Image (cartoon, rainbow, N blue to C red):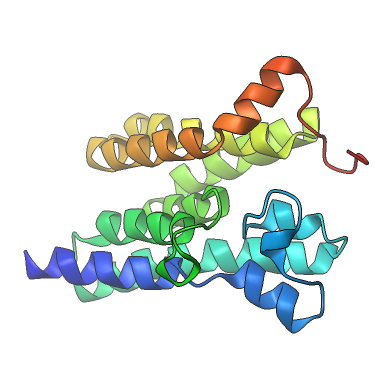
Amino acid sequence: MPELIYAAALGYLLGSIPFGLLLTRMFGAGDLRAIGSGNIGATNVLRTGRRELAAATLLLDLAKALAAVLVARAAWPGSEVFAGAAAVIGHCFPIWLRFKGGKGVACMMGVALGLAWPIGLTYAVVWLGVLALTRISSLGGMAAAISAPIAALAIGRGDYAAVLALLCLLILWLHRENIARLRKGTEPRVGSKA
């Protein structure tokens, strides 16, 4: 259906805006792709030492996915889940950066919030809770991603759960190096001097 194509295109274009890269360049923090993991997400922005830029990146990455869901729902009702999924894919594989983007955790939270607030609330609580307990950013993000399809099923939205499960698998795959470090006990903690 044309509406689904429009929604997916909108989501991809919004999701592919590299806010982390733009903010670090704009405020003189260097080329984010040459720092830490080289990813464009908030966790890597934090490695520049600029907490305010990391917070802004997180909020903007969340907001672009949320906007994709809300605009698609208003313009083409029923297409919002496709727009949200495309936003996460756009963030992870932006065409402007040769398909090397972030890991999609903040974007997926925007999608979860846009689809249904209970899913978004579950995502946020799990993400922040695991992060507070472990101080391991990747673990918090992966746990939150896993919680989203479960929360969708709990509120009777199997249609959302299916797409959120696929996004969860994508996020876990993008975190495969983090998973290997977690198994070895070498994954850095937030605030450590790794």
